[in-house]
Image (cartoon, rainbow, N blue to C red; front, side):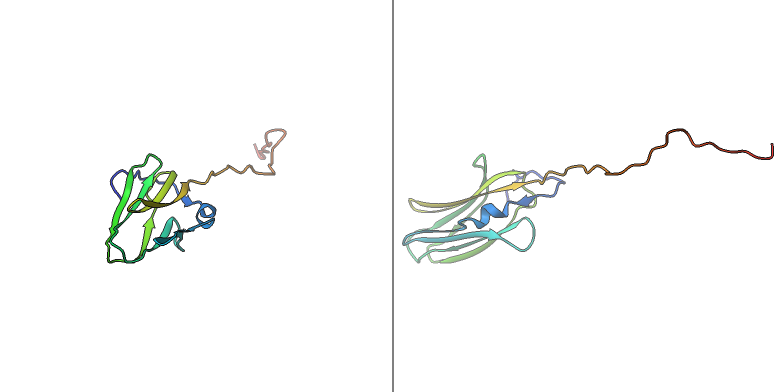
Length: 140
C-alpha cells in the first residue's frame, strides 16, 4: 500500500525501462535472489524475490529519492517467495529504490519515473496573403 506521501499528477508518466532491464536480477550469495522488471501495463513493475528458508525476515521497501518509505512489507521467516506488483502511476517524477534487507545484507534496485518532454511541432508549410482579399460588389 502506498503511503499518503505520494503526489498525484495529471501528467502521463513512464518508468525508464532501460534502467530496469540492465542488471535487473541481483543475487546475494546464499541468501536472496531478486529481480525487478516492467509489467505489461504502463507504470507498473514487478518485484520477484526468492529467499532460502532461514530464521531471517526479509524487509521489502520502496523508497523515493528522499528515502521516504512509500511501501513496506515483511516476508516472514517461513515465506520463501514473493511476487509483488507495484503501481507507480500516482508517484511524482524522480528516482526510486526497491530495497530488500535480511539481517545485515541489503539488495537494492534503483530506477527513475519521469514525464516525457512534449515538444511543440511547428507547421512546415503555411499560407499567407500579400494583400487583403478584394470583395467585388455588383449591382449597386
